[in-house]
Amino acid sequence: MAQRAPAFDLTGIDGQRYSLSEALARGPVLAAFFKVSCPTCHYTFPFLERLYQQFRSQGMQLWGIVQDTARDGQRFAQERGITFPILVDPEPYATSRQYRLKFVPALFLIEPDGHIAWSGDGFSKADLLEIQQYFARHFATQPPPLFAPDEKVPEYKPG
Figure 1 (cartoon, rainbow, N blue to C red):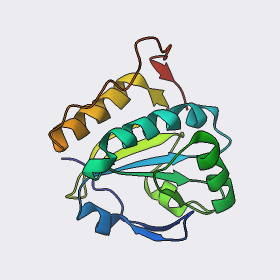
Figure 2 (figure 1 turned 120 degrees about the vertical axis):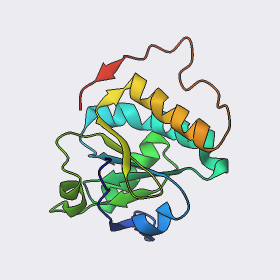
Figure 3 (figure 1 turned 135 degrees about the horizontal axis):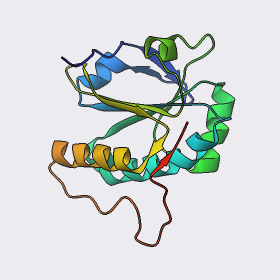
């Protein structure tokens, strides 16, 4: 049986409140935990932004959850061109602890019923393609390739 995702309410860098339970009523949520000091996070998030752009018009919910200050999260989003919501998990990182994070980036695909359908950490090309296929099925659409043929993308980078 799939594990239930711990519920949380966090404030975004936009000052708005984000509630997992309210979001799940609208569909699945991909939660991506990160730290600004993490090089693998810097590498992964532009690919997450690509995913978001592919499914944004269908209502994809992708949240970055930063283990730093709102200002750090804003700077990270601006530098990386991130347009999906960035939420702040302030010290002592209660939400991150509920999800038992060991490494960042850590991704959790949460089904509308509140169960974790998939989770992983670090950068994984296969994982991102699996997430893309999940949302393609969910929204009954065929997105363009996530990785360009001439792009040199490693299979995996540890977090």
